[in-house]
Length: 519
Ligand code: ME8
Image 1 (spheres, protein in one colour):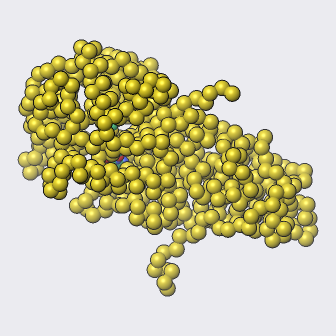
Image 2 (tube, rainbow, N blue to C red; image 1 turned 45 degrees about the horizontal axis):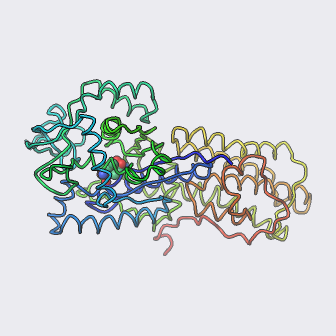
Image 3 (spheres, rainbow, N blue to C red; image 1 turned 45 degrees about the vertical axis):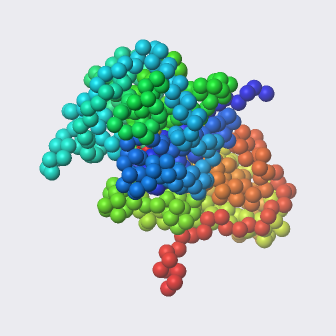
């Protein structure tokens, strides 16, 4: 058998200066859905996530909390690890940038860039935002009404930094980066994000300060203990540390270059400008794609501690269920755009699309098989035009899903699958199999078989989004665990009639408001 093609994808690594919020959970579940999709579609997937533990922001938070930076990141990294587990993410590794393997990889990439002649010692004088861990040119800042200078794009305060610093010759990469964008117009998606980055690069690149001397929470610069690496040099390197750089060539060659870095729109510049430039300098291939997702807003408002609307993803998973939570965010928000959420919107989708449209359809058809056909999946008779039409819609889902996934359009996969859920409900209502028990049992058997077969394909395709619930549907249909991958979709692997099915139990309960419950 030919080896499976590899597919390496990552989330951003989160700053553990606080606990995970809903934006972190959103990025994790979206990336997980892509990882699961590609695995089910026959790829050798490696999925990485983790925490970005160095830098001034972490050190300042630790000082404020009266603890060491190490204790702070140990405590919070644990919470991030628990969050990805709670969200049922299938990551293969969880990297922490304070690990030895990562120090080693960061020094190795530094040495390569130095050998390439791209690093020199000089002096930095300019603006720095600790919250963004980013340098800004003067024209990217403004002074607000309280006479505080802010980074215009992010609105975070900047401070004046003046110190000896190593520089990376980013200016030498302007043309190479523009060539990269021109030759690979899908290098950054959505396209608007690539356009922004390209226009930033066309505007001219300054060399980048890549070391600091005024604090010490970071990775030491090889050969000069006074300096620690700028946190973004070390952070971006995590993507190659985790696949064995610089020692494990076999693993590195198997997975590098990454197929996909999933990140938020605030950190596109680091991934689409600095990261490819560092890699080119180090003589390493650049990733295939950076996908920038949008930001989440709670009822249209930005999350902020002072507004008091920072939502805890653990509490949300408890409230709605993990699969329901994953479904809502991946269906509601066109992937790549900003999105809004509210309790009402979540409950609507859970009750209408999960409990009603899919859950009830499965429960009604499987109960009929249970009660009227002794729990045995019937063999179908000849298919009518209606049967053929709904089966054809189900068989076509995988092609549409693959097409949408070429550009990570997760919401389109779900939209297409739920269009078939709606068709299946119309089919079921139109054929009225409950009325056929007495009049035409053979026809009833065929309708129930067709419905079960359509649900089988829906459940297989829903697995990346709702792994546990989809698995339950497949259990109820008697589909063995090794027959649930995407090679089983389409018309060639229909359900086998004659199988004894387990007694059906509801998979998606309706969400009931706690008050209404008590009344
Ligand atoms: O940026 N909605 O870490 P981070 C959606 N350590 N996504 C959001 C969000 C929101 N409201 N807020 C943040 C860092 N994110 C760096 C990354 S990668 C080598 C280093 C996203 O903890 C954000 O865009 O601030 C980023 O992709 C991720 O969460 C981690 O953010």
